Picture 1 (cartoon, one colour):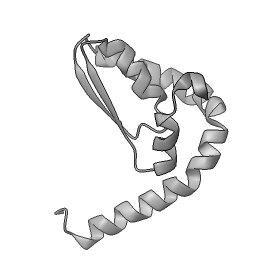
Picture 2 (cartoon, rainbow, N blue to C red):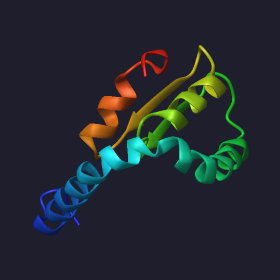
Picture 3 (tube, one colour):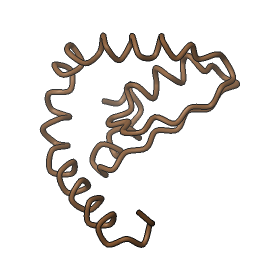
Picture 4 (cartoon, rainbow, N blue to C red):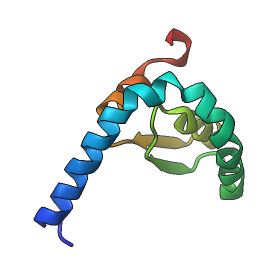
Length: 100
């Protein structure tokens, strides 16, 4: 499927709308979701065996919790970029943790 394929564009619009509608509720209950999803996420990050200085892309970063955890593992010489389809999730990710 090429990037100009109308089916690909429609799928992305559909997903963007879905996650944009879900974002406020997700963010409201994020701490509870983290209780369930946090341990498997930590296990996945451990299995990466990420080394200081490495670069990572966090696809579907949501509010940025995992992105920050990956950044801590990559250290000051590393680079981590979070990407999400939901503008609401990215807006929350841009707010410093201490300000939330």
